[in-house]
Length: 70
Image (cartoon, rainbow, N blue to C red):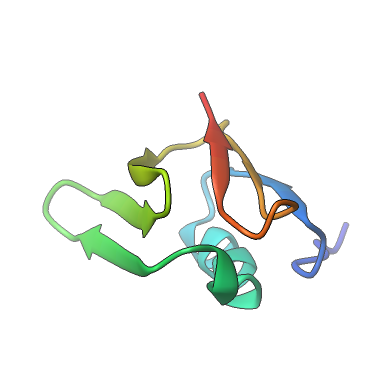
């Protein structure tokens, strides 16, 4: 099943490339990305602070800002 990266919501899975593809389609909802190769952590800086993006998280860009959930 193909993923639609243009949708306003996304559930993070183990595929980092897919998460980055979704985020690249919604660049207006966050300020910066940081991926640490040693810890394998993806951090997203946005209006509500900084979140570490993990598998299973729900991301939405509906409100013009990145909203994440655990």
